[in-house]
Length: 195
Image (cartoon, one colour):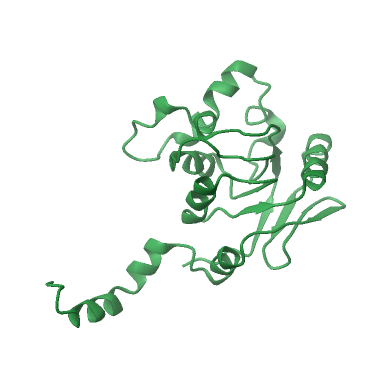
């Protein structure tokens, strides 16, 4: 199990409220058997409409690991493909004003922390990234801060989720695999489970 305490790297600003999961990864890409290749299609329709002007197409943001968004990011359908597409593009943390609940849970399930900050703090981070995209960001789950250059903002996340990242217990499937023997021992004691 891997602990997630800090994420450092370039940031990418994505402005707009209510960016839904269909915009993050359009429905036509959900036919895949695995999530491989989804990163190339992240924001496919938005990127096509903006003809190279979308942040995910701009050269200064290539290789970014921290996505800075606005209010209600990841709303709409509950498709787990949305955080998978972001992860496969390279995103390792998302900082925003607020997140749709299922999107948030799907991010946690694959090890992407989603942290919230007040609207002025998000605006400050987005403006800083637009003015100086070369300065790296640092997301610190211990201190609950996000930094970009001289700007440091306070962020929040639910205490239980934060603790799971810090302890490395966010990966539910990994925990099951790691505790196979204990699970089998418990199951063997149950009269209604026949292995």
